[in-house]
Image (cartoon, rainbow, N blue to C red; front, side):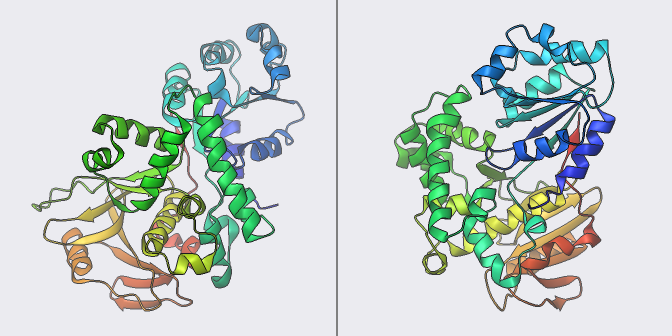
Amino acid sequence: MINRKLLSTLSQSLLDFPAVALLGPRQAGKTTLAKIIAAQYSDSLYLDLERPSDLAKLADPELFLTRYPNHLIVLDEIQRQPELFPLLRSLIDNDRHPGRFLLLGSASPHLLRQASESLAGRIAFHELAPFDIGEISPTHIELQNFWLRGGYPLSWLASTEQSSYLWRESFITTHLERDIPSFGIRVPGTTLRRFWQMIAHLHGQMWNASRLASGFGVSAPTVEHYLDILESTYMVRRLLPLHSNLGKRLVKSPKIYLRDSGLLHTLLGITDLNALSGHPVIGASWEGWALEQLAQLLGPQWQLSFYRTAAGAEIDVVAERGNQRVGFEIKFSSAPTLSKGGWTAIDDLKLSKTYVIAPVEQGYPLAPNVEVIPAATLPSLKSIGLRDSGKTI
């Protein structure tokens, strides 16, 4: 059993709020985590809204739920029954006490909007992503396999590379043919798979909807819609450019990354470390993997972006919180250095600290406030205030 860092945060939220929502992709471990939390309560009830027998219990949801006023009620796959949100608000307002409902969901924007409108002031939101490096704690050697397989529990814990790869291939097929249609999205799975594979080849590059639409044979709004689908189901991260009044000509397009490195490698047909080491995507894959680790370790208290100017100044990730601004350059190299553009970006942004993340065993300074760090030590960056992810509405 790998302990999830979100466990204590969720438990605390249930002591503070009548409802807590745990969102994230399928197979990331939401149900397992919810059952661990429910076991801590003397009275709890778990309902899977994809199970016909549990759905039947909610034929008259008000009558059923009012029978359990002092239970923690876990509603899994809540996006299946969004009409429950107004009823939950009414039940909470009639008998408001913490720890009444734990809601699990797999599709974010629409679900967030409905839940936040209906349960404003009554609910805390948290996101559970696949395993991050702080939960796995890999050695320098193990880190390579973690990067290859990605963080989905059943992929990381698979007994062989082949079984891990086959699980990820099955996950992709299921997501396209079952999960996305279940969210009410009507796009053929074969179309979305082609698009997803095209995005995999563009991983870490600037988003250009018109150019991609031309190659895909559809309109720019259509490819934007496809990208929104993958982003809303936690498959893609859109990293926005830094907006800063520096008197510079800044790049305005976002960069696109697949959130899980294991799924990226599967879509590209990369089966093992040997195939990855010779693939053109290796540098971009490493960059996306490190970005996702930073996003999970830092949490939403930090705003992440990238910096690039028309003159060539560039840094991969800028993390901001209040007046603090920290830079991260990501290099797949045993002897990483910063380019001239990187040094210029550090000077432009007046970064308080810059870290160069690389697959090295020991860190070392490049300059005052610029340090190369081993990727395996990312969880130890306490000096910039790592927090568990979560937000309250």
